Image 1 (cartoon, one colour):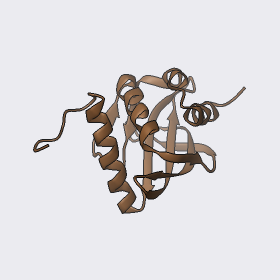
Image 2 (cartoon, helix red, strand yellow):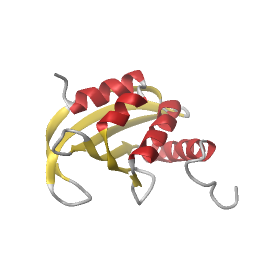
Image 3 (cartoon, one colour):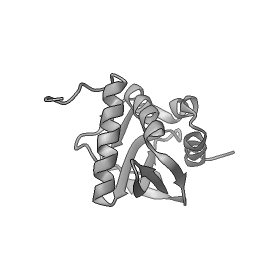
Length: 144
């Protein structure tokens, strides 16, 4: 049977939000490289992933590491997986990692994304914000 990390990776590769819905806990937290506070809750994350699947071009995972790490929310060590990836956003090459933390049932309870370089982080932030606003998930920033 596939691990939760493998199921997540396959769901992203096939753009299957139904599987992501099954893999996220209801109170999942998503730590973004472009937002200080986390995105919280399954509905918000499913909406965010819908945007990410449109924004990323040529997205591909390039590795998989399993282990354990402290979560940001409660500081408790939890089973974890790191999935390095590469992608393009608005012509900018991105190299990053997804850090997944799992609950006792193997569902994703916390998700952290780290990307480089800074110019790619900026391009990603602008593209994701535009998608979130277009989908009605967040209000438009003041002055726009």
